[in-house]
Image (cartoon, rainbow, N blue to C red; front, top):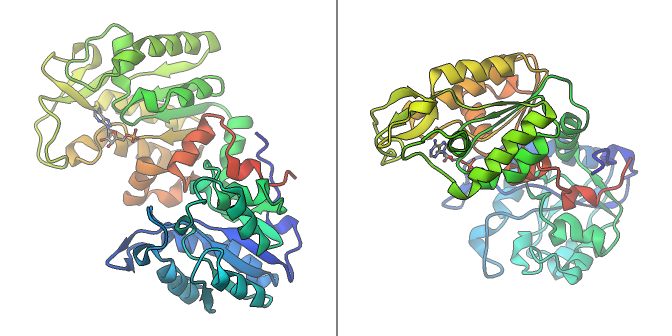
Length: 401
Ligand code: AMP
């Protein structure tokens, strides 16, 4: 995939009606926004468009409304908060492509901003329906995609408006940063290039492992998925999470690593307990054992201290490091040590450090390390597909530079 895409700065937006797909999928409770982080993150692109005299038509989904319009999922709260942050009114449409949206869009003046209702109020959104795509596109002259979190989905508002209606399309600043940092890491990384993968299951990351083995110098595996690799080495893993159908796959991957000259690091020690914590953040008795000595009645729930040092060392000596997935059951303070050690190593490293979204991003933010990481991706699923080397429809549809 070509990651070198035109951005808002490469197209004349003055006086143009610009449909800008944002990620306003903010958490809410009792009708109030509990974190406006995503709205704040969208500001640079919106402010650029306003400053350059575009007529800005914003759109986004929020949550998963199942049966059409539902006040509980209305973007009205977003319009209000955005308007405070922008210091100018944000006109709220009552629908996505209906009369209200169309007439507001037609009446917009240069530098004015409006927001369409939740795109998922339209059934055709997630089906990438050509008719809905055309209706959305009919309100605009240009499409700007700035929602990385949904860029791996071909929906009407993420790709259909280009596929079916041919709107000229560019990226906003958020997507531009995602593709320039991650795209460069994958296409032309500064070496040594180290990837750290964790999380629950090997089967969720099969393609990520295979793709990264063609790119990195060192691949580090932690989290629940490590036990299937340890089993593939012939170790007994007790009651640890095991994807028994994927043991052969892990063996194949170990052989590929050797063939490609990639160092594959697995946990040398592991923190075990006799049961999974219940509740997940409840008190738990643990001990540390070497990875080839996991007792039959014990379950591996985090990497051990020797492994933490080994992984931290690899991260610190890297020039590029990509991390996705926790090293253990990090929801529990006793079992979060491995994940914290990796986050700390990335923060301390001088490398270009990239954290895939989801749990690892949240861990870096909670620990206060976010400003010491080069790039924390705003999309969990999207960043995984990116690491798989897949083409993301919301990015592929944008104009190449
Ligand atoms: P994922 O969604 O694949 O990134 O996995 C995240 C989940 O993996 C978290 O909820 C962790 O609690 C879980 N996890 C990490 N390590 C282990 C482990 N050793 N055993 C069981 N679950 C784990």
